[in-house]
Figure 1 (cartoon, rainbow, N blue to C red):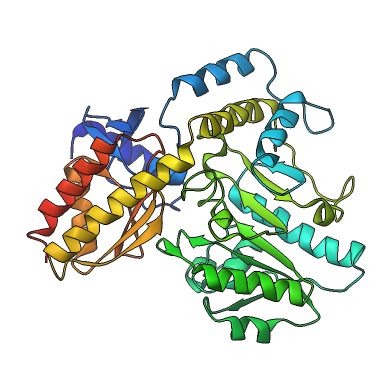
Figure 2 (cartoon, one colour):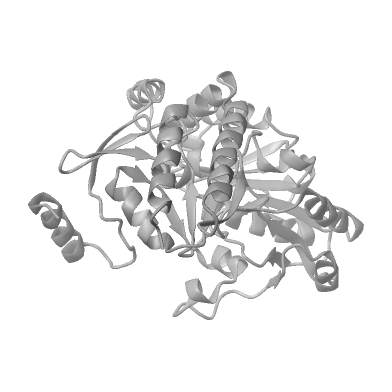
Length: 400
């Protein structure tokens, strides 16, 4: 541990709330899929700020868009019409079947917007006292109180109870349990097509189509959380498009503005009837600066066909890691994922493997203590992915 790193670590401990477990790296610079720490060490970044910098760090086109917008307009609030919001809305709506957008600042806020709209639509438009949201075991929808109640994990709610009521959770992949949980008070089902924080767990297409069918049968709303899986990450622009689903609303954030705080909800024209002037709002959501940058990000994703690229590279990575699984029995338990959203569950000491990867210059996430989570930039070089796989194989040869 260098003196420079130790100094930064000591300042962090003195100045910031103790709410994060930090990695043993103090990052000072990034470019593309590379990061450099305070001592000048270079890393291949396979985490991308937790699926955020999908176009790479300090992308030249995004930087140019940021600079241009910074000299034009930053923030005037949502009391004014703003062309930046409209351009971004047109781009996003062009990727999906939805008809309306609500802009916010984060994934948790996007999920809160979905929850609030679902309740208000049921009560004000459908004239039904339906307010309950059903979610699935293993999910993660955020850390604000509503999103935390939807997530339903005791480990995350410890010390924060009581949480808001009106949420119910059922096991994933169990349609009978879901239908049994639906009552006249049910407003919506909220789920992730790929459970990201749960360790990269893609839900089966037949199950997801069954969930939507139950929602239609019982006349309740079907909502997909696309915060981590959306925006080209899984090999289609939205993860729900992998399975031919038509959710009433979706939430998004993460890579929408490549690192600027930005979230959004897309809703059908019908569901959007639940909002009217004054029913929901945010000061910073959809500000000109973030919207201008996000529009450039979505434009690049579409122009460069990054969903297709994620599909090809994701298959390559998973095929190579499965080859290691066959070659080195007892080291890799399972390889899961869609596109460049990949989980490698290990049968050996995963924490030790993760630490060794960092020491060798590869940054990824360790989920639930057993799964290496890969969420690299969609623009990452194939050679960087191959170098990671070669290094992982070398580490696993002697792992215990």
